[in-house]
Image (tube, rainbow, N blue to C red; front, side, top):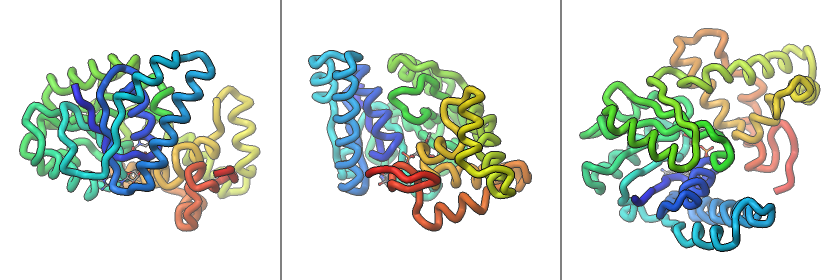
Length: 280
Ligand SMILES: NC(=O)c1ccc[n+]([C@@H]2O[C@H](COP(=O)([O-])OP(=O)(O)OC[C@H]3O[C@@H](n4cnc5c(N)ncnc54)[C@H](O)[C@@H]3O)[C@@H](O)[C@H]2O)c1
């Protein structure tokens, strides 16, 4: 089974690690050469770290890396399962899937890792929307166990089952969800970010204090450290998308503080600056 991952960013790289470690030939595609280089460096470094911590053997690492390839050529994206993890923009995803559908056979499963765009909406316009499904990983994808399998209005039950089984074969805990704003986890978790940002905006406490309190109460990362990890701009676009999908329900209203971080290009760890500063 050949896996194609479109997008070599934070999520695409993590999904690729899970895929090659589970034994799948995996081709990673990105439109930008710099992103391919960065993704490749991240994957090699992550596997090195796993080896040095004794989580995998040197042989397993080398075999996994032997299954990994990179490309920036769209015409090479022919496989059995294609997982898209490009920017969270509907037009970009739709345009990419129209191309993928045109060069792959009918048996190829098309999947999106979108956090917030309705799966049904991305599938609209495909000739065979029934083979389209959401496979939603969490960040870092090679670590987090949970994967949501999202059926759009047209998704065939067989395709959802195949996606579920593939995620299970990576050692993941897969759960089925229907297409709804934010699916399950992002809807529940949205208030962690939105309320954290409101507290900071209202100057109830500064962001570092909010993080410290949340972490002291048992959360692994406070909301601001988590936004920096996810990507401030990605998190912002998910909130914006959910706000729109819930017909401007104020409880999902995006924050001005977060908007300003996005406007400044302070996207978090990936740019070296977000709510916190990082070494790049
Ligand atoms: N970051 C998270 O925590 C997270 C979690 C779950 C799902 N997601 C979703 O995964 C997807 C990717 O998010 P990310 O955080 O990895 O973003 P990212 O910005 O780290 O990576 C996106 C990559 O897509 C590439 N790209 C842009 N346009 C492209 C195109 N037309 N063709 C091919 N590649 C293109 C960019 O060069 C970049 O490398 C988004 O849909 C996002 O909502 C993100």
